[in-house]
Image (cartoon, rainbow, N blue to C red; front, side, top):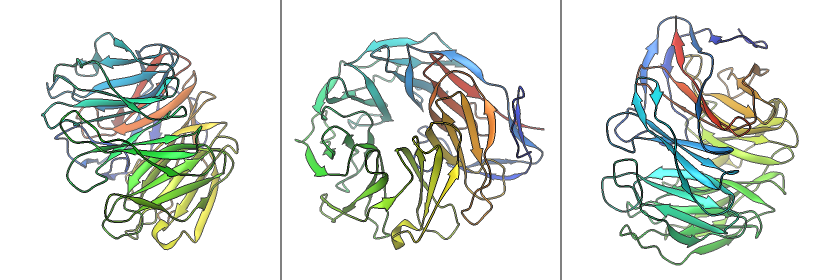
Length: 381
């Protein structure tokens, strides 16, 4: 079934292995792969879970350490983040909302201070900073540690920049045209930020070994430059500008995965002003194969996983005009026309994970317009 779908559920033919989005973090202790579906794979109709006002992004983690996957949304219109603790199979408690600085955007849920509890890192563009909330292991957090992030700090990612086993913060500043790296001392203190020049309006960064040297690099969408910029790790925790890779107009989000199955990293971006997804194959070889595909009106969030069980990594894209678009991989890194379903509201972000532990991938979608997280549970019939 690869045409337009406006039904109450979305069915995908196929069986085989299941993989996770390359750039998302699995819940601590969760497997990287889950058992295959032996029948017809699909997704149930969206279940709407209330959040704070106007969620931009969503992430997952076991925040209260009960073995269940919890949700956190960053609520741009509410200047807050919301914690939704799982209360059982496919149910969540009322959102616990915590005020942040103005216009918060990106979030990462990781262990950032050396204790066993998950913490939150959030970029707040209105306040021009990054904020780290240390977790207690019960779904509550300390007041924020406030770090310089820049007036255009709207998204963030984390990674071990120095190779010392500690996760550092990476914050693109769309206003200044820079990427800021904030090194973590793993004791609730952080070094002064290092700032690297980027192109016009850097928006979202991903941390990955792009050139195959065993060191993790940074790839960033440059909304104003219509490209992906790269910062290459020099081996001492510093970065130098690498190749720039063209996209269509207005790239926002990106994901890294091996789409053509040759063991090398590839990149996919959503291009909000062109209504497309650009797929850049073999980034380490300076990307000789760059192709764009239709992806619905104003695509924003993107995630990657094997959605139809054929062993190839597919794409899931959410759009600001109430759509979810699935792009299926032909097996060689090329993609067909999008399979569209209407989800309502204004969808900004998507995460793919087996949130209920049944061995099937699920979608978690931050719906800004509806002030909800929409969960589409995987099905196998």
